[in-house]
Each structure stands twice: as structure tokens, then as C-alpha cells.
Image: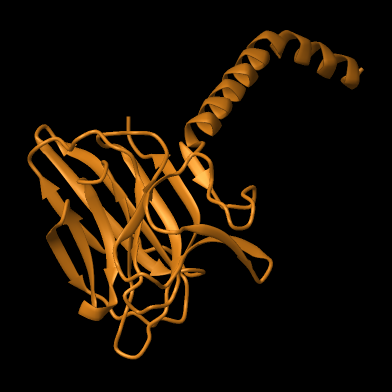
Length: 226
């Protein structure tokens, strides 16, 4: 008797329950789709010695290498200059780029490495160990700088975002932290802009001033705002 009543009761609720389930499923699917990165690359599908086909290498002998069972992109330690490559979707604001990076020093010489948004003359977040600093650049101009002590023995994670935070205000912010540790809740460095940023692609940069290679891995570009 109980089983029959319970079954009939479920049948009476089926249309509403089904509707709610479909709505929940639809929202879950939409959320999952919205959370999908706009671009990601861990180099596992790229042949050793090559670069991904979708990279626009501006300069530098970048090539995929393997170490400890993991593939990564490597910039050789010579020549001593600034090198970079572009990839992914163009945007003015509302995106974040993140990546893992590793470099080493040699004597008193240090590398410089970073991530960027909004094209070649856009915004760049870079680690500058020789200056003991993290810098935000707009084009070639340093617009913000904070102290930073670089250990040189671990991979670092860098994340840069550009977002509109007012009617005529855009905030450029960056976070830097040791790989394997929790990301900082607050930005490591910030800069305010009163003019809308230019449209442009994300990019990665490196200057092997120490004469030793710089390595890159786990590049992700994601949407952070409408």
C-alpha cells in the first residue's frame, strides 16, 4: 500500500520535478561551458623540438623539450635578448592569462620572464630578479613595481588580468606565487587605467640574461568577465 501511494505521488510530481531537473541540468551545462578556458596548452601534444602550430613566434628559438616525464617549452640561454610569442584570442579586457615559468641565475646574472595581454604594446607582468621586483609594464614603460625575492630554485606561477572596474576605469592586476602553493587571494601588483585598453592577443616573454634556459608550461587564457 505504501509503495503504491509513494509511486503515485512521484508520478504526480514528475512534470515539476522533470522541469526542475532539466533547468538544473541546463544551468550546470551552461556553467561548465562558461568555465571552459578560452585557450590552454601544456605542450603534451607537440613534438619534441617543435612549437605549437598556433604560436606566432615573434623572435627566439623556442622549442618543446621533455624533463622528468613532462613536456615544456624552452627558450635557450643564448643569445641574450628579449624574446616572445603570441597565441590565443584577442581581447580588450575581461581575460586572464596564467602560466608556469622556471629560470635560473648564473653568478650575478638573472633572467627576466613574464606574461602579457593586449598585444605587443599591451600590459606585461614580469619577474625581474636582478631588480628584486615584480613589474607591470605598458608597452616598454614600467607603470607599477613591487619588491620580490626570487629563490631561483622553483617554478613560479604568473597570472595577469585586465578588467573594467568602473565607467571609465580599467584595472590591470597580476599575481605571482610558487608553484604547488596556494595562489594569493589579493593581487601582488595593480595598476589603474582611465583609457580603454587596445585589442590584442596574449603573449609570453623571456630574456635569458643569465645565459641559462627559461622554461614555460601550463598556459591558460580564461574569461573573467562579460
